Amino acid sequence: MKANEQNVRERPAFEVERVRRDFPILQRPVNGRPLVYLDTAASAQKPQVVLDEMTRFMREDYANIHRGGYALSQRSTALYDAAREKVARFIHAGDAREIVFVRNATEGINLVASSYGRHFLQRGDEVLITHMEHHANIVPWQLLRQEKGITLGVAPISDEGELDMEAFERMLTDRVKLVSVVHVSNSLGTVNPVEEIVRLAHARGIPVLIDGCQAALHMPVDVRGLDADFYVFSGHKVYGPTGIGVLFAKLPHLEAMPPYQGGGLMIRSVTFERTEFSPPPRKFEAGTPNIVGAIGLGAALDYVSSLGLANIHAHESALLAHGTELLREIPGLRLIGTAREKSSILAFVVDGMDPQEIGAALGRNGVAVRAGHHCTQPLMDRLGLDGTTRASIGLYTTREDLDALAASLRQVL
Image (cartoon, rainbow, N blue to C red):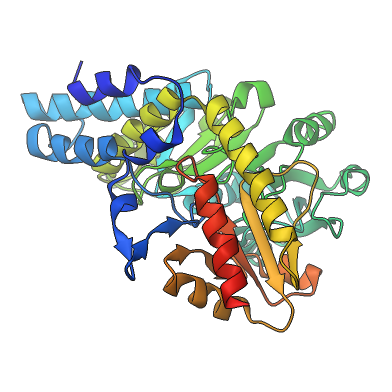
């Protein structure tokens, strides 16, 4: 066992101040002030163990994977395959062959749209999404609509940001051939009832894709318990590197789906007349993959697992309640997204102020938040907004961070 792996596994119970020391970037000042990082929903910061493992791998073990008969290639292949196993355990997949490495959740959704959608959906078939989807779960289906003539159904939400489940169930007609829904909204923090969504869809024989980008870092995910057909998330959201993501798909789906891209590593044999493809998941991983990214993702999942997702969820839930109380006390500020089941997101608008202006002013005080439409323009249109200012919570967030946000807002406003 490597030293960093042992350190990760032998951690005591979750303590945020100790956890913060694992993230070098949180120790640096910004504009002469301590960094208050409240943009984890966009991209999470990286713990030292992830940085160390990626560097160690490149320094000691790096080589291209598969078919190399020499020691470095065999070692690199073993570590890459072990990363896939870690992902399978992290989301409780039944088989590592159900894990496809992609660049990010966006590519995972595009893979399903391009492979499953092109092969199994016909003109007039409907894909049902919701009004709170990220552009990554809208645009691929629009492209498929242009190409194949499918339709796109959009289930409504309430003013509080909750999915209208009665309307959703009514919309599950015979035309619907796929449901694609976000687990946790990146703009509202709404936690959708994905178990019920899957149950209702499967009762009608409809497969379900779940966008888990904002869920996998905040709460335990059990794809077998959910009975999800497809589940996607991005490495950089779960404290790993960019350029690596995950598509989980039930093995029968992967076996039936045609390749997404063609090239090396995803083939068994090639002649000028025909190609025989490898079985999943390699069938969907053309070319040299992001080997270092996969190693980093595996280290990140080890780290998060060592802290315990249930512990992380409890810590972040308490912070969300504290932040909500603080922001509600600020005159002129209105929280956007007040669902009963909510996670990690504090989005707001202020009367007479542009969200970008607020974000820039907070940034000058060392408070890092995001402002704009958050890649959910249809949602903003539904709410009658141009955008919001969004603070988002991570496992390293403290009550003091949220106090600093509130104090800076009072100063700005």
